[in-house]
Image (cartoon, rainbow, N blue to C red; front, top):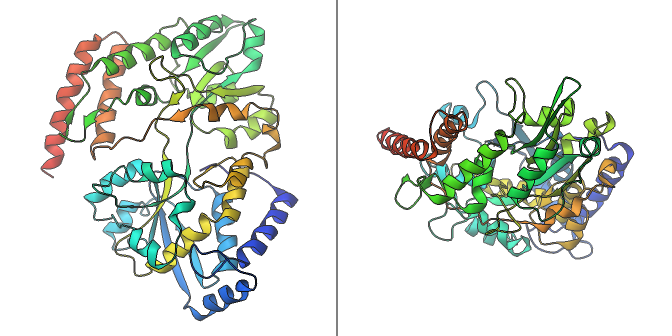
Length: 441
């Protein structure tokens, strides 16, 4: 989810419009409202007992703007519901809440996180509840429903999608102008980006300018090739492959451009947005964080995420943000009403205007993308939609820890301490050992 921004008068007007629209919704979660049903919805809400729906964040973020937008619409449609969004901190992480016997009613998370909920007894199949509450699943983008089901052994739906991430290539126009180079263009291959980076990696005036940063090391770069660290079918390491070797060598070629190694204490985002010494940054949705740097003189634009020749116009896993009801919740119907409001056309349209990719099919909601952010007006926003995410993989519950091991071995390879074959061999051995240890817990 994106970070908050000041919308001022425009936001107030939008919320008034949302309130008016939400009042017209029917009392049933997904059914269409007929004229006059608004009063019926309000009557139903008044008849229901006041309830607080406790929601926790788990490996995702809901910014203050999104939270308030949902709460404002919730007050109109279901005033008997209070949403208590518990942000992770000391004693309030999801794991700590569960340990303390305070398992929430709802979890905001992402689809790749759902697999590990199996061992935590947190999986709840939403299909039957959706059916009895008239919650219309046909309104959603089929690919997001598909990617939400990646951890399901059958056709279970363990969460409801509300948005998804995307990947793009951001670039500093001033640096390309400074060094007399053409800007990145749509449809570039990674090999072409590396060559372009060489032209804008310079030491000038005592400042080291870097050409490219892959954003998150090797993992995002590996995903379009469907390179998994663990085979979910066998629960064994699957890193000694040509795909992983290709990824290791590609990302090392970026860092080995003389002067392009990221310096200790630096981060790619800070180098790009504040230091303004990074020409290209391959990353996810940064639109919400670019408002202030834009005001402070960052002359940036965005283009399509680079791809492989064998996987043209395909970018990495697009994490789907989901809301998941917990199986222990005593307020499942009201929890689904919270979800209903969050994925209503009205709320989704405002969040789309704020720069979030909607989970809905609605062309009207999609067309609103980025409209409330004036600083995006002249940017090549439509380029991000020219690539598609690779289908989200069915992931092993050991994926995260396995990827940490792969990352560490890549660093040793990057720093010339291991050759690529040895690095991948060691990664395989350590991943398998880790899985054996985890199984004994």
